[in-house]
Length: 402
Picture 1 (cartoon, rainbow, N blue to C red):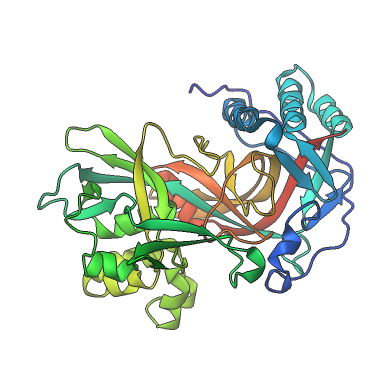
Picture 2 (cartoon, rainbow, N blue to C red):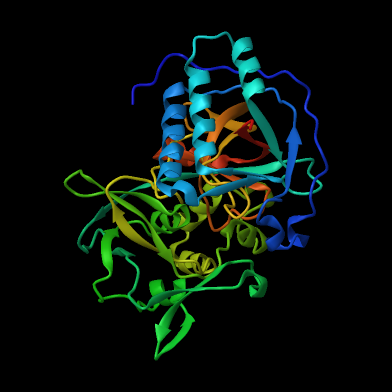
């Protein structure tokens, strides 16, 4: 898409007024996050600026409208004690598009948005004054093949046929999940294979479940974490692969564990340092990767990456949140910091920014009201940005006044 030179800048200068927060995530029963009373804090207004081009914003808004049109009258989207139908969400997004497309001064845009929309601040984690932890994710590109070779020996698997998904009563679930993913064995549903059983013991090998093969086991492990990516085949074409199902096992991040074991220094606890250690220590990496038992099964997609709404994600505009708390497809504003890199790919500074985004995705590690994951795009630059981001910030949702 050809980016327009025009960058939309909005300034809303009314002082913010924040109401009380919520209980800590660990103390808040998951069922309290459902229905019409999620942990939100209202605001009258907030200073804001958008740092990206209008084209990407229009594309992201159009995808949310497409989602609401597909859902139709079945959808209901709640912020605090107010709920909105799919039609009301569509009307709000179309109103927003009309505003940003009009030839107005920043002051006129500010006044129009303030007149037409309510901004609702997410309370985030209790005790953090509404702060939300922002991280980033990206779409990796791996070198691979549709057949196994000496160069490409590591498989991506599609979902095994014995995989079953069983609904769980949330009140009886210890971890707050509403489903149990396992496998059928001798007429019983049992836990699915672990990463160790699949990668080390080869329990899925030779069953025709392989959809592609890659040459870098660390890149494959990162692909499991990101959930989707592209595989560059020997002839140069790209194969899109995206999340189909997981083994239902818990997601566990490696960096904290590696610090506890003394493998990484506390000040080196980052995505890049973790990745570098795995690459440099092949004799240890499989055991370390086994710590994250969650294993992803993939499917081939015609486009991607696809988010939780089964629609393409937009770089810099799509976010992942806990969709049990925050409304799918909703328009939001984020305020946080992003890394600035020098010519050698090292972080030279951090820059504050604000941006309109759309709630298009979710993730296994994105739980509770205090977490947002920003989709940073495809390739190495996106990987650097996503790997560096771990910043507190603010999250606001915009809804059209009734």
